[in-house]
Length: 320
Image (cartoon, rainbow, N blue to C red; front, side, top):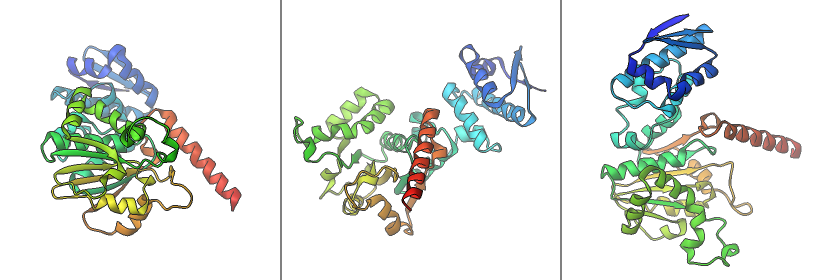
């Protein structure tokens, strides 16, 4: 049994609405929590009690400093501690290597996400590969928004290959942009979530934010821009080369994709896979990999990823 002391404000903040944070902590670690006055008593397996103590004490210091610790921050802190019990949670949430503008729009939800943010801050060209639910596209859009807010870039250019937007979509009304708009919707969703609908609408109207199919990038050179190529596993090598050579002065590029979800027709190679072979050793370029262990969506997403991996592995063994 361990007792810790928290300030009244810290205790009220950390326990959450109707003590939902304490219930979550108890269920996740198998510890019993009881609060009396400003003292919290922890009882259970020694390792779990120690983790709960560290979590509450360090988050308590953050609250005392004026840092807003809500439900998501509480759960992120526990997830991070489970990954690395020795980590300093105060440093994790106040990391000086992450620009303040980034912290205002997004908080990393695990150690890998923090490392990804640091990687993008330090490199002008970052390739990011990983399964659905790891936050790679959302974080990239957040970093683009932060760069714009700090005036490190003058515009954001977001693009995706429209693999499915061939002749089969010819019957749809509108021009090419309107036809491929559904494939760009996840990028819009992330922007609306981070910047708000009205600001995004203004930026789109003024050309500060440009969202377009990959084909629209040909022949352009983009200076002072943050460029994101999403769903890059569906680019051909020619398209990938075309996109990478659009990079102008004072610009930054992030390329994201999931090599387990390639939709290219026939045996056409993926430009994302080839890019690692061609550019893997170049200075100034970083390749960053998320895995299924980094999924931060609903717990079922990771189970779905696992199930499909097992299914594909079994099918390959059957074909061998």
